[in-house]
Structure formats: structure tokens, C-alpha cells
Image 1 (cartoon, rainbow, N blue to C red):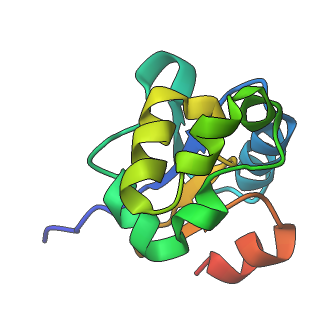
Image 2: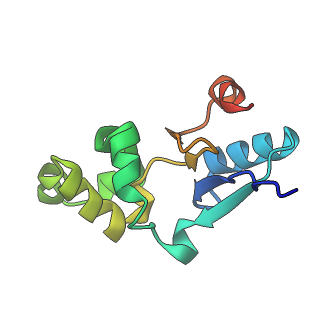
Length: 123
């Protein structure tokens, strides 16, 4: 009898980000196996970005309240107007992505951490 392995939860972010730490701790405390993808070491997975954009939109993925965004030139900020321009920015500046991005077992995507939302995604 063969069992199909359960897809893994993947948490994308930066290890020293407080919100990423909260999300990782919450998943661990709730017995959830997950993989951590470190943007600093591994970069933004270009093959995942289109899926994220469809699931949650560039407006939610680009953290326009963060330090990285505020340090960008006004012309660079103004140029981010659609999926293509947001993708280029996120690939070039991973720190501009709101964190964590979580890809759940069912393929769903969430951005940020909220315990109630995480709880609702568990089987």
C-alpha cells in the first residue's frame, strides 16, 4: 500500500523578521511541518511569483509601508503599477515583499500572519 506524501507548507520570508518568526513559531507550536524559504539566501522564487500574484495581488504583496519601499526613489515607486512592474521590483528587492508569504498544502497563498487565519487553514 502506497501513501501519497502530504504536500508541505512553505513559509517564504526573512529569518529576522518578527512577523515571520511569529508565523514559524505558531506553525511549530501547532505541530505543522513546514519548509522555510529564506529570501536573503535563496532569493524570490521567480516561478512562484505569478501564482502569488493571482492568489493575492501585487497590491497586497508589495509592502508599501516598509522601510525598503520608503527608501526607493519616487520614480521607482511610481513605476509599480501592475503585475509585471511589481514582479520586477520584488525580484530585484526581496525585502519589499510583505512577509511572510505562505503557500499552504492546498496551494492557497496568504500574506502576513494572523493566528485565526492560520488556524482556519489547518485540516
